[in-house]
Length: 531
Ligand code: G4P
Image (cartoon, rainbow, N blue to C red; front, side):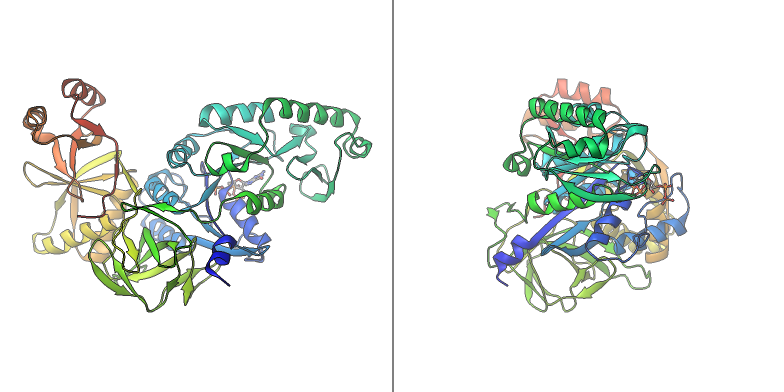
């Protein structure tokens, strides 16, 4: 098969949702369709139990599961589908943001009763920043939920999306009977009261076909026709290009648990979702069909066995063919590396592969060479852009608790930061180290891993920081010099030697911005790969 054919076969996407909306259930149903798993329950839920903040077994279990479910690949109707798993727990949101740099599209799952929730809002914002094509699946239609049109409005308003319904529920709540699939003009009904079984799909050429009245009753049929008319007049027609450009988001209704509307979603998805897309680098835009291999590291996973400190780096292939045992350039280090056992991922296993193509993810064993955001190429010196670092939410000083193990501690912190577990800031004034995390859970993970993997002990000390702001300014200007003098106690460098202002309150940020208008404060930093 030619490279172009391999590329056009591939769909690499992520599912995002607020915890409990049904991401795991939907993933599992998609895998069942692909024949990648045989029974429901095979995909372990990748979530830490709510409230578990100090259960280290749970953390270890989570690490194990998250490597197993990091990439779930399967074949469906001649397509190779790669689902990239995103952790639902909000303390791991940064991981999810990074994974989103490796997807070509996403499916957003919304709970019909709860509507748009906080985590969904945050994740959708990240997708919008990158114009990632999004498809919305409104789940749990077997339950009492919100009115379909109210939900469509909520999705538009809260998420700022331009929705186009491609399916519509027939009836609501206790009257809910099934789904009208606008995309394919067919109806699928539940077979029984309890809404557990699903009947055959019946196709219609014309919505006025009296057979519909026979199927769902005259009243429901009349309402359905009315609603379809409303959809036609209120919403624009589906426009694939607008969807691919991130300007329009098709919506499907269904029930993942009951396998209702899932095949319709998958069939529409493989037809409309984008194949691997070109990606911007610091030099030029790289196209998937270019002969030479390029790719980037979006996730690093530590080995589960603490005695072997090797790690698995997840590389998304952007262009060309990745080959086993070929020399590739790690651009940041100018170093040639060769991989004798690159892993490909499937739903239930990982395997050594000879070749992988754009859209695919390969897992490379790493002894400490890689950093999140690193670019690998056949030789060309370019770096992919766009792996962001967000301001952490929690900050603490980290202190060495065993003077004999200072080296181990430094190495451990360094490597854990490379993995993207947290962010490190070194105070300009005195060299003290501050760890910043998205969730409080990470502090315990870091302490535990430093001890068990590096033999180092640390303690934390509270520090009152509201946000890390990356500073952009003309460092020679008098304004910057004055800013640096006044704020010297709050200035630090991040891992990439970028200057960061650690502000203690939003008021301070506001005042600083007013006083020093030419010193720009950013809450997001793009990781810079070239030191
Ligand atoms: P998540 O990965 O997004 O966190 O959600 P997950 O799939 O684990 O689903 C959360 C809960 O919602 C699960 O119930 C799951 O069975 C249920 N669920 C998912 N899809 C549907 C649906 O279409 N209809 C209904 N009624 N429920 C659905 P749980 O009781 O929390 O877990 P479990 O014991 O069933 O695994």
